[in-house]
Image (cartoon, rainbow over all chains, first blue to last red; front, side, top):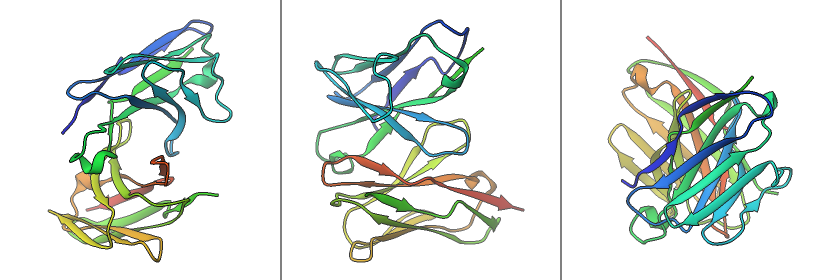
Length: 120
Length: 109
C-alpha cells in the first residue's frame, strides 16, 4: 500500500519555541494532505486541509497564524506549530489521499506515523 | 449536521467474536471506512464499503446498509493484539472524511 512518512515521531520543546513537522508521500503524489490533532482518548480532529501550491484550508477554531502549513510540492507538506504552549501538547497526524483510481476508490486515507509533541 | 455514532468501549474474550456498530448521518455518502488505531500510533486501514453488503477480509468483516445508515465491523477469533480503538469514518458528498469518536476494544484472556 501507499506510504506516508511523518517526521519527527516525537518532539519535546520549550514554551515559546516553534516546531516543524514534515509529512511526505513516498510512492504517490498527494495534491491534498490533511493534518489532524488527537488528544488522549479522543478521536481525530481535522485541523486543516493542505493543498499543493495554494493556501491551506483551516477548520473553524484552528488558528492559522499559529499552525502554519506549507505544501510546496506534491509529496511534502509541513506543519509548523509557532510559539508553542503546553496546551499544544498532542498527537499530530497527517494523512494523504492517493487520487489515482484503484486505491480504495481513490478516497482511502494513508496516515503518517504521527508526531507526539510535548511542550514544557 | 453530520454525525457518526459508535460505542465508546467494548470488552470481549480472547478467541470470541465481537461486532462493533456504527451509525451515521452525513450530507451525502461516498463510502465508509474502518480503521484500527493502537494507543500512541496512527490509524491503519481495515476496510472500505461503498455498496451494501458484507466484505470479508480474513478475521475481519465489514457490513454496510446505506438505507439504514449503518455499518458494523465483525472481528472473529479475537487475539490479544486486537485490543485497540476502532474508528468508523464516512466520506461525504464532498469527499471529506467524517470521523466517529472510536470504539475502544478491550480483549480479556
